Image 1 (cartoon, rainbow, N blue to C red):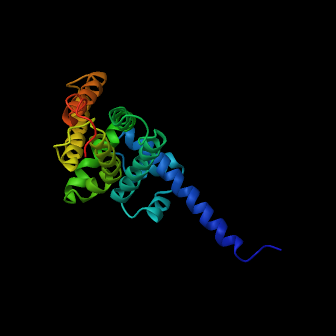
Image 2 (cartoon, rainbow, N blue to C red):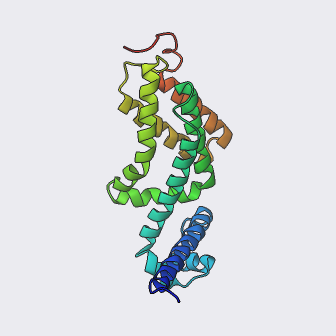
Image 3 (cartoon, one colour):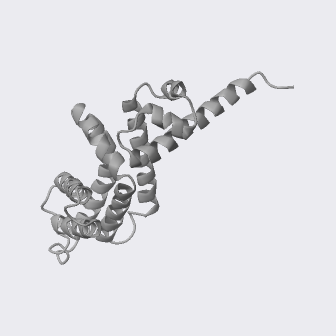
Length: 207
């Protein structure tokens, strides 16, 4: 005999598959065509526009969900990179490489999402950065304690400087002013210099 809860579970499963298909389609389409509308997303996902609206009230909501997914994937990659292991300077480079790879895969999407964040006073951008800043802050504090990074600089300031350098490198690469490989290499060098990785090397652990 079929249980009474089965139809409800089936509907929830169908809804989850539908939402996943929409997010898959939006992630790929918006990375290619950042101005694509919900109708185009629905076509690529193989659903109706009404189905898209059933899951996302607006294009802005859908873009936000896509950015959340991209961020979660990047965070999972960072956690898999074992940022708490080995020298802090090497871990910072691993984190930067993962962030850059995410940027490379979703350049158009990430750039297109920036105006939306700005329109909301930066709240969205701050939320998107929070998982990265948390990991980066712990990593910088670990490097300062170990004497790898400049202990006289505020960890929060070093986090902000690192993120700003990342944005600058991404903007220069996306605009074609600097070759992407060169921008990635310059980012690595600039961040280590900002952290004082060279000058702090011989100081010893901080008390």
